[in-house]
Length: 83
Image (cartoon, rainbow, N blue to C red; front, top):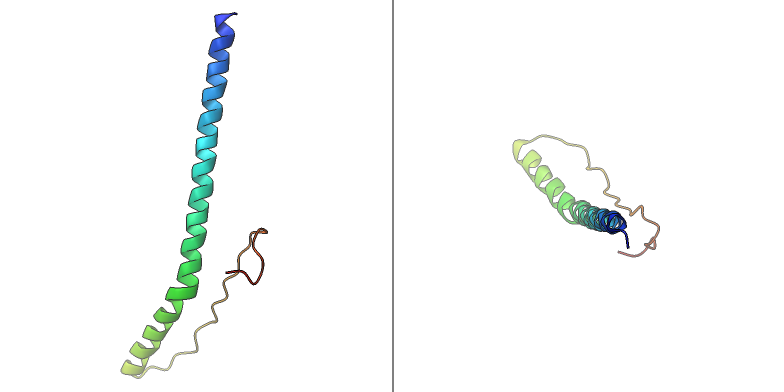
């Protein structure tokens, strides 16, 4: 067996392993970002709007109603009613 083919095979296997590692990390980071945005939209924004209304009422300022928070998942693997 030619040692040059062994070096080429090792190089290709190493590059493929690094690519798979990069792909896994990117997908994991995207899932964590999606979960963070979902949590902020569904749990924290209503509390922030409530605190803002209390502060405005304390200062005697009229503010409009907050916009409705409608979070929807864009990925195709989730059903519309699934949370």
